[in-house]
Amino acid sequence: MALFGKSKKPGDTTSQLPQILPEHVGIIMDGNGRWAKKRGLPRKAGHREGAKTFRTITRYCSDIGIRYLTVYAFSTENWKRPEDEVGSLMRLFKSYLEEALSDFKDDDIVVRFIGDKSGFSPELQALMTENEESSADRDGMVLNIAMNYGSRDEMLRAVRGICAEVQQGNLSPEQIDEKVFSAHLYTAGQPDPDLIIRPSGEYRISNFMLWQAAYTEFVIMNKLWPDFTTDDMDEALQIYSQRNRRYGGV
Ligand code: FPP
Image (cartoon, rainbow, N blue to C red):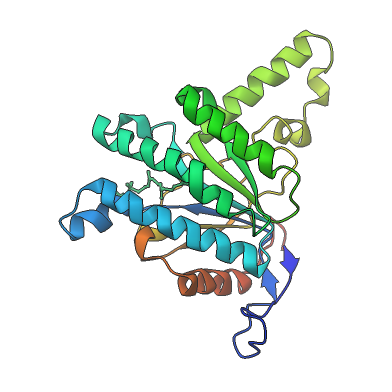
């Protein structure tokens, strides 16, 4: 948790953000399909609009001083969707990685991908690596884009990594604690999310950051992701700032 309470715009003294801002925010970008269906459009049109919202909200989070933002873009289960939809998502990711993400340069955003990159085409994998390498030395907000990400898969990988270290004699079973486990996750070295926002009114975690979200505050918003605005973000931050976090204590 961080204390920021920045003004939203330079010189704007009336619209203050809450004093207590989360350090790490996670967003399950849900509702693109329903947004498109409501308008009689193909699902891919919803994903295109969702990508625009992703860009706006990412920039906004960086502007107001959020330190870490993790967005759920494609899960390990999303491959089950029709070929046509998966294909359009891959094309959308490619165009973002080629163009839009370089936009984040001016905002000093560090881009990271969490998930199993090997599931993507060599071209997409190369773009992911390029984006990570070219942004690594920036010192702004860390943006984790979860792609081919599943929390169960992430935890199984951690277990395999830890077992290998034990087998090699570099670690004893007694040394395995929460810190060691966390250090084997994709989010190693990052704080756990303080707040996870799920638009679209669904009350589900959908295999997202299961270990990291042990004490995360959840805010469910009744807005489909393409309709989600910076005002909705402010509302979620306001709700979060009023929560009493006890971490199992009193
Ligand atoms: C879930 O909504 C959304 C997705 C599976 C895709 C999310 C991807 C984007 C917003 C594009 C972001 C782009 C980049 C580069 C990160 P859904 O399709 O399950 O919606 P529904 O529940 O209404 O069907």
